[in-house]
Length: 356
Image (cartoon, rainbow, N blue to C red):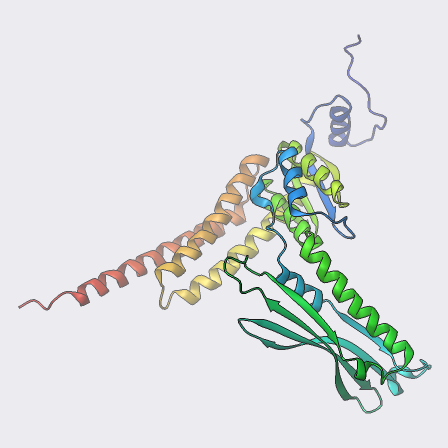
């Protein structure tokens, strides 16, 4: 068997890129910085919580990222909040935007207490010529009745969807069809969300796993950099996403100066934004710092500090600007802790019996 290194199909004039291509052809990772990871979680297949747990165990993923079982209350709120339709009334003419009328169907919150939640599907008629709403009519009531039986799971209950047939039948055939379709959508959406893990929660699994366990650096929304040391976990997340119909695309990045500069810039921007927000909150708390408040601020500071230390150690880089801001925040946090200690000492002295 030949021991000659494999030659890549593509050779360029860029030394760093050629080294990267040769490394990949030879099965090495020395020239691989990591991956750009792009995920797309839309139009996913229905998946239950138990099935999702089985996949986590099979792929050796941390079950702390598993979402809880779907709750009927959450299903009701999301299904009704998403219900909306807008359409022109009558035949749409050329000057409809300025002279016509538009109908909007949407949910209005009506009441909420310990036993039930009620929302109304209303019809708004906008008259563009008069630039005003002509009237609003309730077409249906969506009601969530909480399960008040002992030991019922939190958020348990059922939805009742009651159309106002009299009001609906006052409208034309096309409008009735649109309203019926929207009510069917609410009912279907509620049943699916009550039974299956929704796309938003599946998306959160990938986002949280990338940001927390993989130390991913967000380049743009839905686009992350992940270091090559997380190859196994990233492959497992990609397989998980494919099982419920999602997509995780990995684009290899060469260990080149330009790629490092891009990733460093993205990490530095996020860290600076977090620290600047923290500085503002520290300034607001400085007037009358409370122990619980300072502990929370200190936790935020340490989270950025640990992320910066891990990033610099992993990539062998030095983020001067971030380190300078961390030093500033550290000094501000020290002042807050001193102020909290002084307040506690003053309070203790004030509670002691007066000395004679």
